[in-house]
Length: 376
Image 1 (spheres, helix red, strand yellow):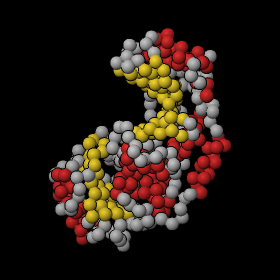
Image 2 (image 1 turned 45 degrees about the horizontal axis):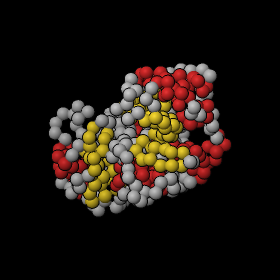
Image 3 (image 1 turned 90 degrees about the vertical axis):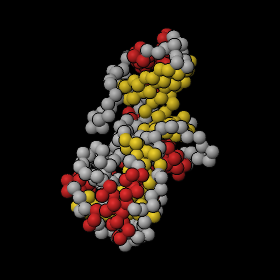
């Protein structure tokens, strides 16, 4: 069994734990969640499955080594005993992300240098060391996380590569794009049953409706991308293909009505292009229109959306008028529906005239936001 840690944005831990429980990889009863992720144990094949299936995680780390070190020779010797040949091939670049706290070995660059030397001792040649980058269009180095705390050294290997919110379909973006992982968490938090109609009247580049369509039809979020573990010498290519085939057999045929709109024609073009790449264009009804002109499907259903905040978009005027119009339209056209929206706080959601709850705190692109719900 491997000791693993699924990393997520702060606030998404409950949804990630629920996903792991659904995959049979975690018993959430009595679970003590860490900030920024969830720890669990699973087989090596489940490392593949977690990367393929998790919708709210950003990466899956494998605990590679743990030992005590108070001097650099000790660090290099003990790190050199780890089974690097199972995970690295000679010449493959690595990225070393080092953190030192309350330890005698406190110089992070020196720790990284010794770790690279230890890998070279194991492989016969030191690996090329690159700076960390997040470009999924290029071959990524193997990222290795090293933490020294109170002289205890832990080494984790990233099994994901590009962050998991990069599903591979969102090449076209609109202003202030929403991460796919957060969009999926919003859908989970809303309580959407995956069969009732879903409406997003501020869809932007289409992330929420696309994630809803993928969720409703059971498409694995990682089905169209590469992962770091595929370059490991111990990678089981046959087992991976079997997992992908099994995930493909779970795709449902029927889908609920998913309606998405935005007043920005460029955003709608981007959303349609993204939906085409995701393979769900036929499952989403896109249109360019203002919130006052929306035409919801026969309900009741769910409204899940990310309205403007007026912070990064440089909009003029007071957004409270937009939120008031949003609430007025929902009351007129979506009575009895469930609504779930991101905002920067009560000042905006109260402008809708709807009884949104206090919501839960989340982060969206470095902004503190709240995900609030109500029944229209």
